[in-house]
Image (cartoon, rainbow, N blue to C red):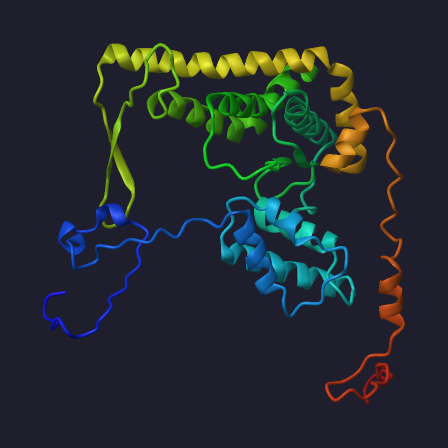
Length: 358
């Protein structure tokens, strides 16, 4: 760079998450002309990150870090470290000597889906509506060929959601086809369609689904060129604040007639997905009722359990909440506590209460 002699070995390194707003003078040859892109880790990268963060944590033999890596697409290294820490805390609270696969699954749900809010009191009508809503999402995904497998369905409130249905991709994807996006729209519309079919009324529970579906459909029309009526064109150039990186306006570079056509195409795409979800659920009402009733009974179903239920199998009865954890927990509870130096600690006995006025 300017100011250094040619024989001085000075290397300048800088990092930014907004390379598009850098001054071109910085990027001239001889300055910051070499760019290295650090993207989100892929499945092998996530597995390696998990192995680094679990080196000093005792793991059970059943723990499969590859499976955890496959189930955490889009997470950065800090998120994966958070999952490992949460899993270790859960294992400690459950009096386990080693972290088990269940601890990792619960920690992953907490980080990716939000913390459980079991203290939230829901009426029976709300629980039933939520069960059919999430059952609609899951059943549409189960019925549509080519869909990602369902990972978990729950009607336990997490974060701001009363229920959640999550999918796990079978393989790492960096590109989405038009058919993939149309299937995703059908998944999103499955909850609203189930509510309308069963209860013949609509609720506010589908607000997030409608927002995501509208944004996806508008991107298909305006950014991805996936509309036959509008062709391979983009519409609307976003103007951004250079220093804050925030979108503040969208430049309208199309006519009023084109704006009407865009709205019509967005509506057509969403309504097509909605009608497809309605038809799938209408043809499989027995499976929808079965899935919703199972959710009302068990509150949480993983992908394997949902698949067995929809194939007519009966699940094992739920374990009572008062039943102790596996045998290793009981052994850990009977083992005497030891201090920092390894000496045995006597159990604590509270002092006898003083008589009044002493």
